[in-house]
Image 1 (cartoon, one colour):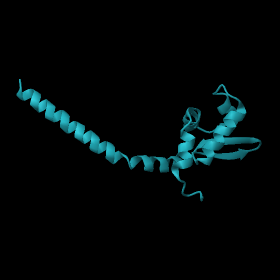
Image 2 (tube, one colour):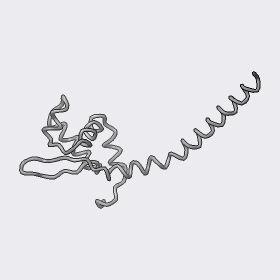
Image 3 (cartoon, helix red, strand yellow):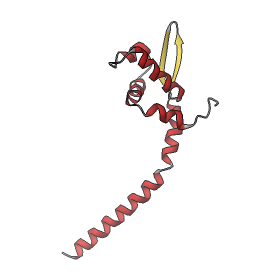
Image 4 (spheres, helix red, strand yellow):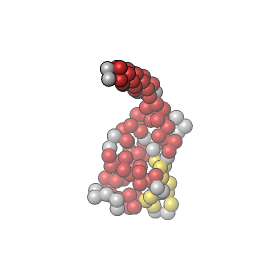
Length: 115
């Protein structure tokens, strides 16, 4: 798979875990080393490293090496396929909410005419 187009499958796998979602929240505030991320959780550094690997495989983070450290940062572009996939379903919500609004308005009109 090339780096310019990723399927949302890896991103969904990465987003399925609450720890990984929390890691993304932390990385949204700025770059962090593995140690800095590990300090935020009550799990082993190895477990955090696995989470970061899955996030990188899902293209949700980018990792660069600086000396002996691996610096992790959020990759907002990695969320684009997820956003696009989910936005496809907005049309269904829009239709359902439109029907609900129509039903409520009809009920309100009927309620006022019975006063």
